[in-house]
Length: 346
Image (cartoon, rainbow, N blue to C red; front, side, top):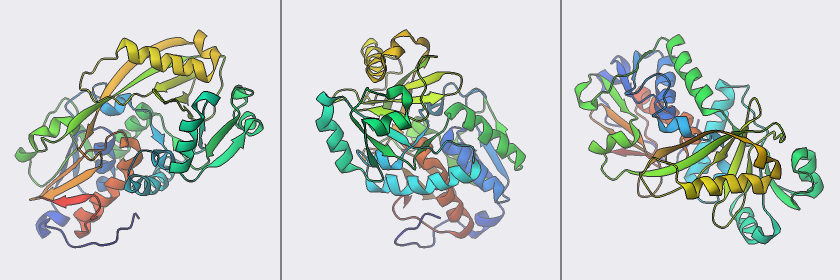
């Protein structure tokens, strides 16, 4: 389990700690992991979701699903990588079929300064020359002089694993109600609020950060792992999915407009073409964007008080952090243990 430097007993009343029913609001990646872990622990769990079972309105629907704690160290606080590393273990346990075959970072010579900066700010990578890149990803042979290989990172297909988490919750004895918006203050027992931006009534400091993505299909390019292409203006990643499909993303824009702009579409497609010209003949399957909930410091937060638990602010790290955050919540609910880096009593 993820360890902290200090723990203490929390304010959850004893009568709620052991026998009370648990309601989780929001069936995205954060809420799904919270509900599943608590149901597996033998608790009576109900998961509520305001949208339908397709989850097309959820931020998780538009995520990349990268499990890359070492790469994220380039721009995130160290706590993100520490929690993310614990999450990787949980992902492996729950989904042993998850591809943990690493991620690759490359750049063109003109962007070498950004590439070297990325290398200095991250750990857990191996430097590859052109031959090493070709051995790892034959489709990129001759295209890049050097690369950074993060061997222990992985990726999931968000829509697939989210549906499986819902199925496993039901198998564990939990219940899901779709098309069922709920107010945390109107539910009995322990309530875990995972509503994302919809929780601004309780956390007005939340903001939405737009992430845009494009899904394309190409039979001319074969990749085995996510590839990040460094660029000073629009660094992007290309994630392989089954059936010759690739997800290209994602922008990080301080805007709450949910559409995909022409500028962003051009930049994402240009980046894919810069990674491999064969993507120029790819077929566009889908454009989309999601608003990631973020606090001013871009760090996750679990707020505790009066039988209410709010899990929010996962920013661009939802799939990376959610399993470990759910483990923390379980420890708090069952034993009153508080993780001082993430949890706050309110």
